[in-house]
Amino acid sequence: MQSLSESSKLWIDPRGTVAVWKFGELRPMKVRSSVKKISPDDQIVRRRGRIYVINKKRPRNKQRQG
Picture (tube, rainbow, N blue to C red):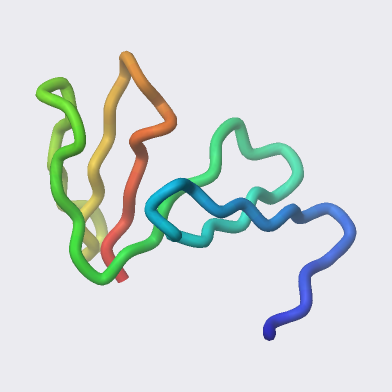
């Protein structure tokens, strides 16, 4: 298992996805091999060669493919 610094916390959502919540970050971002919309308000965007799912109404739905 990868070691985390003291300013990071490990977070596991109900689906079993692991995210690292770093100090100063508002919400953890889920990193998955396959991203998809969780709610109708989700937007799929491509930035810097990566695919992200963002949601302004529910920031907890943030995802990144990778």
